[in-house]
Image 1 (cartoon, helix red, strand yellow):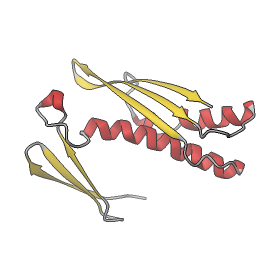
Image 2 (cartoon, one colour; image 1 turned 180 degrees about the vertical axis):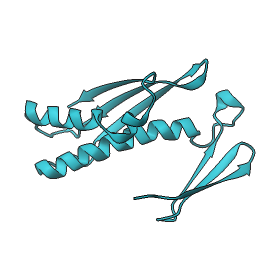
Image 3 (spheres, rainbow, N blue to C red; image 1 turned 45 degrees about the horizontal axis):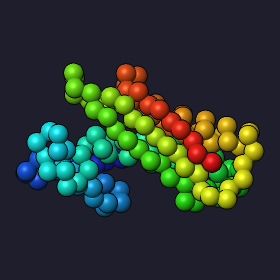
Length: 136
């Protein structure tokens, strides 16, 4: 399945991306440390947000299969840039499961494996360090 996105440069180091299938729009801007104002997600911020969203989505698929409600789970993402070449150098992700959820060790392993095998994470360059901590 192919999905089309149209990205338009809006000036002032900002872009607008249109998801053709849904009509959803995302706006980006260059980050503070690269001539931007920092008023919107930067493109690299979106990559990191995609990692967190993907991990939670794959965990959600696992939760549905296991008949476990993980509504309210969060991915707290921190991005660190590398300078030579300029790229995402490290992503730290803390996956916080909802309070009061009771999971067996086997279920925890299933969720952890789901997060670690998300397609966005698998797409990133192997030099990008990705650290994941799970809080239950």
